[in-house]
Length: 132
Image 1 (cartoon, one colour):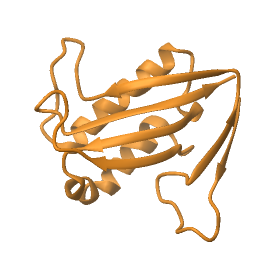
Image 2 (cartoon, helix red, strand yellow; image 1 turned 90 degrees about the vertical axis):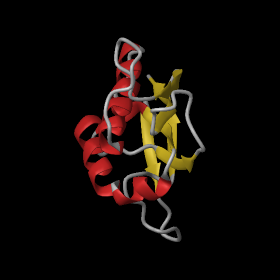
Image 3 (cartoon, one colour; image 1 turned 30 degrees about the horizontal axis):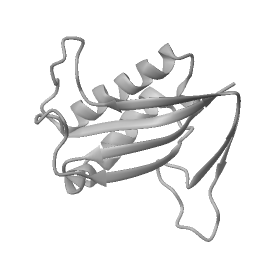
Image 4 (cartoon, one colour; image 1 turned 135 degrees about the horizontal axis):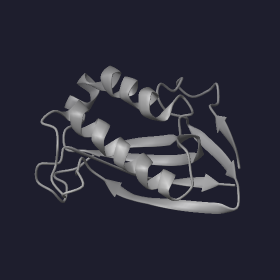
């Protein structure tokens, strides 16, 4: 697989995402939304950063089980129940992303939602990846 991150100079410089990702490969993996659920189906973490870390780890676990790596991610959508809180923690969340997924950022969006499936969930991530 090859990916090309495209960040046109006429757009605001991206921080922690790419404006576009051109991916070529032979397999597309669609990743279901992941929250901070543990193996027993319970939400873990009382803070947004704790839940983000677990949700991202869960997303990457599903990706690895499908044969992919974080660099294969082409698109990730983050659903947050409080975008203002997400912005307050943006630096910390970015550090968690880099720690778990590296610096090959996919195209991303953050969307505020009223609530998620599990009432205790503060954040959910879904996406897709293109594998060789």
